[in-house]
Image (cartoon, rainbow, N blue to C red; front, side, top):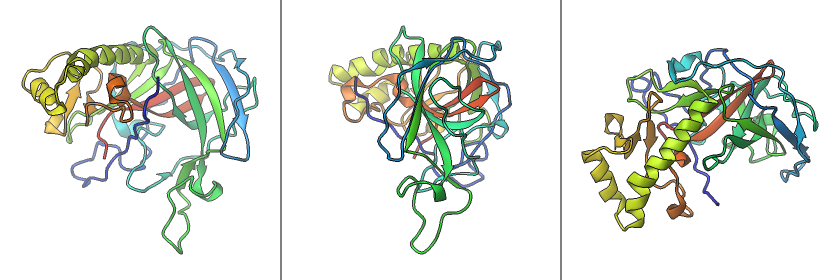
Length: 306
C-alpha cells in the first residue's frame, strides 16, 4: 500500500522555549542500555558507487546477545541519549555524529556504531519491520546533493554529516521485548518528558493502538464527509479514542496511549498522496539505529515538526 514519506524536522525555537526539545540537526543522547533482537535478524547488503542500489539475497544471522528489557515506557532526559532522536531541519545537516562503520558483506553482522534507519510500519498482526539501514558520513565525503550545500564560496563545516545514498543494508527487526526503543513525543514546551524508553513490544502495542483509534476517531468521519476542521473541533471539545487537544494548544491534536509520550498530530492525514489511506502510525518516524555488542536500539519520533 503506497504511503507518502512524511518528513520529520525540528524547527529552531528560542533556547528559552526549547531547552528540552531536540534542536535542528542536533544529536541528543540516551543511556547505554541496549538489547539484542529476540529473533535472529535477517540481513541483506548492497553497496555500489552509484545512488541506485541492488539488495543481495537475505542471510540469517544469529544474535550475539539476548538481554531482557523492562516492559513499559520510562521517561528519560533527552540529553542522556546516545543516538539522534530527530532529523535536521531548516536547510541544515546532521552534525557531530561519528562516521558509521562500513556496511558488512552478506552474512556478516552490523558493526558497533550509529546508523540512519527507516521502515514502513506493518499492519497488525505483523510483529516485525523490514528496516533500511544507511551510513552517516561527513558531508565532504559524500556525493553532491547528499547534504544541504553550503553557501557559494564556502565549504562544509567539519561537523556536517549526511546520509550515504550509495549503499544500504536491509535488516528485519523483531518488535519484541528484546529490542530497545527511544520514543520522542510532545508534552509541552517546558517539559523534559518528551522522550521515553521502552521495548519493541511496547512500540508494537502503540502502533496497533494508534492505528485502531485513528480509524475510529479520524478516518471514519473523514470518509463520511467531515472536514478536517470539524474533526479537530469535535475531538478538541470532546476527547475520544486517545485523541484530544495538543499540549500547549500546539497546532492540531495530541494522542495518548498508556504511559507513552504524547504523539503530536500537526495534520490529520499524513499520507499526502493518498489521504484516504492514512494511518495513525504515519506520524511515527524512524530516526536512527545504534548497534552495541550485537544489540540494537532504535529511535522513533512523533513530536514537533516545522
